[in-house]
Amino acid sequence: MKDWNPDLYRQFEAERTRPATDLLARVAINTPDFVSDLGCGPGNSTELLRQRFPHAHLVGIDNSQAMLESAQKRLPDCKFQPADIQHWQPPQPQNVIYANASLQWLENHRLLIPQLMSHLAPQGILAIQMPDNRDEHSHCAMREVAAEGRWQQQLAASNAERVKILSASEYYDLLAPLAQRVDIWRTRYFHPMPSAQAIVDWVRSTGLRPFIDPLNETDRQDFLQAYLLKITAAYPVHSNGNLLLAFPRLFIIAQTA
Image 1 (cartoon, helix red, strand yellow):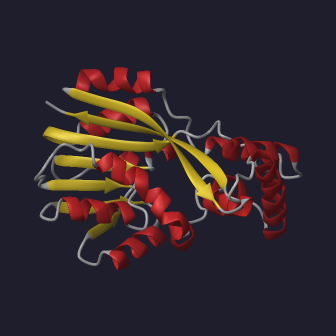
Image 2: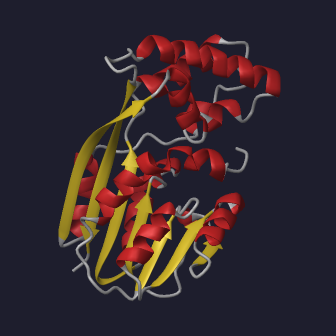
């Protein structure tokens, strides 16, 4: 895929930051020495971590240079570095590993999650939040448009770009032998959106990227128009003119002994 667009991603920053705040609220540790933000994006989650843990050695990790540059401008006193989460090796055990809306892009969680747990110090916490919305209208429509248009063959592999995450039960069974405490919950947010186009704009910076990035400009615009029509049909207008974007997310807290 092309590099991420920080400006487009930040268009709905308040809505994107809310689950990051909810995740951090359940991190039961007061004075960690070493904290890592995996998939830090433009720094909105890192900013929360800096406010919560002002004296920690905090590092933001991302594989997007554009996101890292945006985060560094936002938080000039924080450290950011490029890295692939799947091959990330911290220089010392971490007290908090925080992964907000990043691991859903990575494969083989049955290997990845234990690997991340192995990087924790005693009493360390792995905190994860992942979108769990593949079966929502917003994402079903992406796959439908990809399968119906002249780009069908070109986009045949695009649906595999974002991994189908495991179930809560599977994550629990994976983490229970590795942690003294495992806390898993699922929240379904309902975000008021002013229009169907606003929903398209939201997902253009994330879930739609594997579908539209490979296309030329003409095909991209046609794809987006076909997608907008499906979104318009799928989301009813409510009494005040808004649409409600349902957005389920899975949360995991695991703490070592």
